Amino acid sequence: MDFIKVTVDERISHIYLDRGKSNAVDQQMLDELRQAIAAAQDDQAVEGIILHGKEGFFSAGLDLVALYGYDEAEVRRFWVTFMDVISALVSFDKPAVAAIGGHSPAAGCVLAICCDCRVMANGDYIIGLNEIPVGIIVPESIFLLYSFWLGQAAASRYLLEGKLFKPKEAFEAGLVDEVVDGKSIRTAAERQLRKYTQYERNTWRQSKRNIRRALIAAFESDQQETIDAVLKQWWSPATRSILKTVIDNLKK
Image (tube, rainbow, N blue to C red; front, side, top):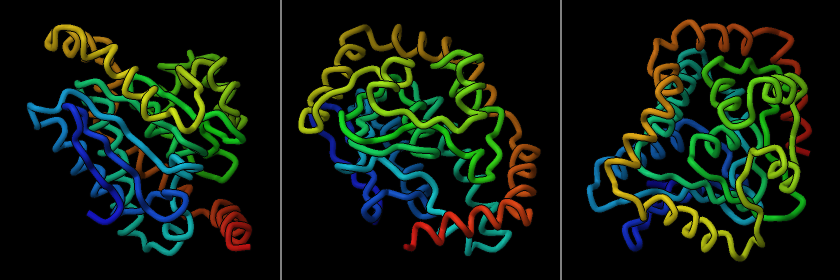
């Protein structure tokens, strides 16, 4: 795999996002991540996963530069795969921890909130869902995932304003579970994971499935209508204009 690196250490699968400086998500990265999640789920020797980014960036979210150039079939395939990956992470019944070593807006935040626990590095970093300001519709299933951790009222307010949190703000809001020095993030993530793996395996995993039953059902339902709405907005002149401005700023 080119953009996802996996190491297994003491029955923990460490899945590293490794695409460029900012770990922006494109089609290939999603394909590889889906493969890594499935492998960890199927491997009886793996007790849980830790999802890592890089120092400074967990993931900057969607690679808007790449996606802007996709044709209609490619964009549809991307969104179908994206929803499949999120569904796989939401339904992953072993313990999962996100080690957020830096910025984690938009799709980066979505990947993190699929996990059971989030440990974030302290620093001048941001995390949150800011899709609306860039003209991207947030699917209902992803709102349910956001509100699973923040509560519906808070999630609604933060989503509609595109709120991005600093690490300590994210901790206070309940979006992350611990804020640590960046050099300690792997150790902290492993410690959090061991809190889960100490319990009887089947009891813990079935309880997780029960707790997430509504979430899992939301992602396993037919996403066609949701994706159609996202794509309709994606190709609208208003959103294309916003994306073009964002991309021009990124290139500068």
